[in-house]
Image 1 (cartoon, rainbow, N blue to C red):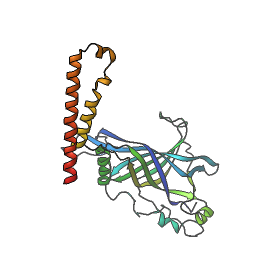
Image 2 (cartoon, rainbow, N blue to C red; image 1 turned 30 degrees about the vertical axis):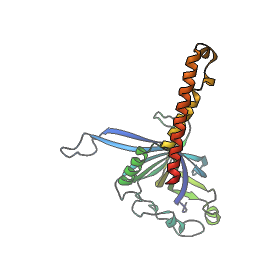
Image 3 (cartoon, rainbow, N blue to C red; image 1 turned 60 degrees about the horizontal axis):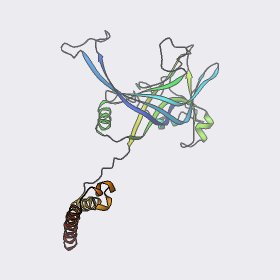
Length: 287
C-alpha cells in the first residue's frame, strides 16, 4: 500500500457541456453578512471521458471489485491557491515513493488538502435515485476561478464545433511495483483504487483536473465576390434567357416580330455585359 502516490492519466473528453445554476445561499451552515445577495450563481463543466489506462477498484480482503476505462467528469471553479492542497505535489513528487524504493508515503498522503476527488459509486447499493444502472467513476475537479471564467468565456463566444477535448487527471492511486519501475509513460498502465472500510457503495481518493484542453473545428467563411465575379454572373444570367432555353409552348405563342425584338435586345445586353467584363479585365491587367 506504500505505493499510493499521485498518478497522471490522460483523459479524452466527449459530450462537453456547461451547466449554469442559481442556488439559494442560506443553507444554515454559514452566516450571511448583512446585505449579501440571497442567490448565488455558479457554473460547472460536465463531460464524459475515456482513457487507455485501467483503474481497478479493489477491496482488502476480497480483491478486485471492478475495472474502468471510462469516467464522468465534473469541473468547478474554486478560490485561487486551493488546487494542489498543502504540498502542491505532482506526479514527479511521487516517483521517489513508488516502484522499488523503500521510502514511506506520509500518513496524510502526498495530495493532502487537495479539494478534488475521484469517486467510485455503485448505484445498485445506493439509496438515492440515479441515472446509472451500474458502478462508475466520477471526477470532481476544480480550476482557479479566473482561469475557469476565461475557459467558459472562450467556449461561449465561438460558434465553431468542438473537435476534441483532453484532460490530465492526477489522482492518488496504487500501482504494482514492477509496472511502476519498468513501464514507460506512453505504455498503458493498470492503477488500483482501494475501497476502505465496510462501505460497498462509495470509494474515494484525492484527485485534481491538472489541465483541460479544448480544440475547435475551423469555420471557413466564403469571401465576398468582386466586381469581375458579378459581371460574369450577370453574363451567365443573360445567356440563360436565350430563346433556345424557352419552353416550346411559350415560343409558339410569341409572334415573329416579337421574337426578332427579343433576340436583338438579348444580343445587345450580352454585348454590353461582355464589353464591361473586358473593360474590367483590361483595367486589372494594365494596372
